[in-house]
Image 1 (tube, chains in turn green, orange):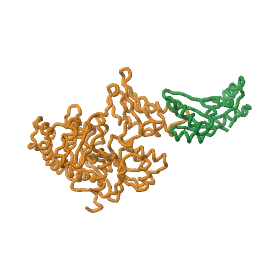
Image 2 (tube, rainbow over the protein chains, first blue to last red):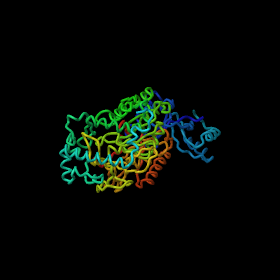
Image 3 (cartoon, each protein chain N blue to C red):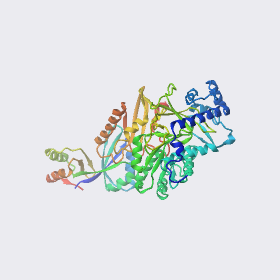
Length: 131
Length: 438
């Protein structure tokens, strides 16, 4: 089952990321992991949190533009070759990954066009899908 | 007066061209004499130009009269252009004076009556009646918007809510609880109200609002469509400026293809802003007004700096007054970007047609290494935000392409977080020209 990832639009200016972190802290929401992508004058922040709906409400209230998307979360161990195993499995089936990042608890979050299909393939390979 | 007549004053609103011209000539003679006799500035100005106030023989003679400009008003601050003793003046209004001395205008008792009459006629002729409830969300104070609509709506017999601008949640509550049917404010404030309504769950289809008399700033057809769609009203372009009267100079009828000018009180001309030459009907240029019935503050050929053209064709609404096209900008709002003339309204026209883009924007002009740069800031709402940076870049690029194909210069689009662009409760600030700060 996919997990919910929260995406936040951020202008590239001082203190905006800190503002997001502060809002989450004030709402007592745990930030489990994140990644950022930057363009010319803005970036997007992808976060995995303990309560995505509550986090979204709080961020919206503070004026942030947000989006919720399904992503796959795969549990890995802290040892060589773990990432490769995921990548090989998907490459073999010609599934391209849009983006991928690591979150706390040695888990990898990734996005692909067809989430259900990819989860099935990864599961069949014995990889641990987290949710 | 019967309650169901179509026009406020049918004799005037549907008068023949000849009849209008006759009235205009008679009143023009009177106004020129009044200015000459009772004001030193005008006496000298007319004298220097060789205009004999007793020899205004036709409307063509208007062309001999020198223009009056905003600088003339400023130079004669505060009361130098008043043509009656101050003891006859019962009210003053003034511009904000952000760029110099404010311009102060005065009204006698008759002037106030005539003002209310002009605007009441406009409102009545599009369908406002005494059972209407008019919410005046223009500012009350030195700005003419608030008091202008108050007096006019009272003259019709409407119930007026003089709520003034601001406190938007309260505006919406009043609109709902008092069942307002007409609103008067700036068009940008209308859109801000729509945004607040959407955020607070107010639905315009549940309200009673029918008409908006919107003015105080130039606005485009795209903006009109947006307002009509979101507020479920007829958004009518109402034009006026304090130097000439305030609201009540001209306004759209329900046909919405031009603003009928109250020709028995004002003569409109279009001139070439560079040469001062009078242009023909249909030619685009600067609007110039001469008042015909004002006592305290008449104006002779006042240059408005608004860019428009005149439309002289029969109108389906039945009114015979000549129309002016909605002002497309002001000659002093015109931006020159790397030598190309550009009005903010051209950018607005493009932006407001883009689906899901919020109707708030700021044009930022700068000069970097001797080159003009121009960018447009727009906000990223949830409607356009998905989680891929590629989608945002594509969105940015597609707006840039649309701007380029319609305007012909490259304008950089900058995506901004929601609410970072200032919302206006009065006249919107659409341009930030950093070149002027250097």
